[in-house]
Image (cartoon, rainbow, N blue to C red; front, side, top):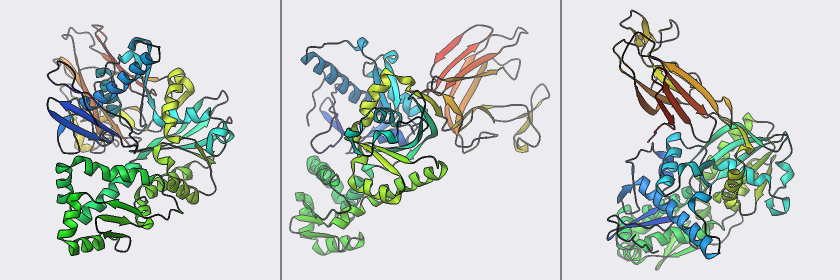
Length: 519
């Protein structure tokens, strides 16, 4: 683990972002004489509404702007690419390459835009960057993999026209689920909107660390982290290699040598250690012998229960909605887990499974295919209802009376009604569907139109309430009132991997084009 500062920069940083032998993802940033160690930081985008100034914390609790961490990681990858191309005698410029950045399909628009901004800060021009949804990329790749390169199933299960299959992209941090149908020309249509959650490989790791916290105490583990980061990280790293071997027939105990700080606590308080193990619910499954802690096979398998149960429940709910689905495509890093494969097959014995070799690389390889042929996906299903908060004309029996008020022209309006742009569940072309909205000032003295875009799980919201989440607000200046209509035309494009936006003040012709600044 090394880090080199960039020459001459006041804030200098370089990034290491790769898989080591234990497949441990991390990023080290050096700023002056201080080091920051970030691990599995991609999950921060899943839980937060990202903004330009959002900070994330490294494993020691120190904070940096999230955009800096992500852009540094992307820059390391692009630098490595150009170095490799040069070493192999194929030097290229950034302008010669179309970059494809994959994102989970369940991410919000702000998280996707955050990744685009991070890539731009890393030196990639926005016009040379395409965002691909991870389950779509994996699905495209598996459409082209011959049966001999499948570890389970055959390609004819998912590539015949009219076939519907469920894509389960189960990675390290998130699980994305979607249903695709094969068209006559071999392209794919999304039949069910992307859904998912945090059921993934990191959940198993988290359960493992929780055991250490219960047995040795949270304060002791934090002290170990502060005193010897390498020893602390080795706990997860050593487990990562063992985790991949676990299956139903797994019968090996997992013996781990304790770090010096933990062994010291065992010698000082042996009875307390035994009590902590008993209180962890694994009295007969975990033991401490000298400077080693021993986990039985049952104890290791139990760590998988929470994510596997969540995955199976989600799959079963989707299959109930789509009876035509006969096959399940398993991709993503956690899908390589034999125990996960066995439990899913057991729970859904009437389905066939298609699993490519090295299924953890399916998204990566599919992203290349998507970059060459983005129209291989012909349509998508909207995950949310999008709309604008507006004081529309009050409709008796529809709008709540508590929102009713009279404007200066004597018209009754509804305060913050939800003006729908597009509804959840709508099938839209992957080339984009444009929704045009016109608006004009409510008062004659109004010199600006300010609108706020919201999204919600509700298919038919009436007003903006606590179930609606703010996507972004935007403002447009208006010309002075000269008796002519002062109309603003806003065009929203849905169906692409990112939402696009364009607005125009009709009288002045002033336009704002591109994406809404969601950060």
